[in-house]
Length: 254
Image (tube, rainbow, N blue to C red):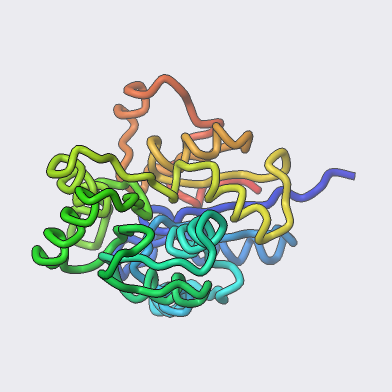
């Protein structure tokens, strides 16, 4: 008897673009449920809590619950709690990252923190960037939730965490440690969440540099969808290839 594959699915550019569902995304999730497949929506977006992400999907008519959502904020909280339990951090981010860190017992402070942590937010305060830069200059380790330099919304691409991380790196000379995709740490954490092994899992994403790379390096089958940031002519820019390429999740055969 063949074991049903489990699916790890990126969110932005795969299920939604901004506030709008990608055509066929809701049906794809329903096909997973009807087929008895385990699935986890695995996003680098650290701005929102799981409850917020579920609400965002539901507004786009994609019905899921919080147990099916895992983001880079949760992975970052798990990472720092593993390496510096009960520590503290100076955070540039939004509610999702703040809540994930406080949920694992972290203190958010600008006084002698264990880490400077950068995540996604709608608007970055320049004063906070200056404070983060000075803390990093003073020797505080620098962590960022994800390396994505841009991401899609309903109006096109917008700058993301990786772009601001590059600014701080340029100013300080210190590169951040990125916890989110393509770091295998996030993949291992996600697989543990659903009790699955890499040999029986599929990574579905729209980015060659994060989704497909992480899936490949973690031993998963990979499916690239062309509904997000990657266009067909961009695939050959990378030394690796996805297992499959489809126009959107609507075209994925389970």
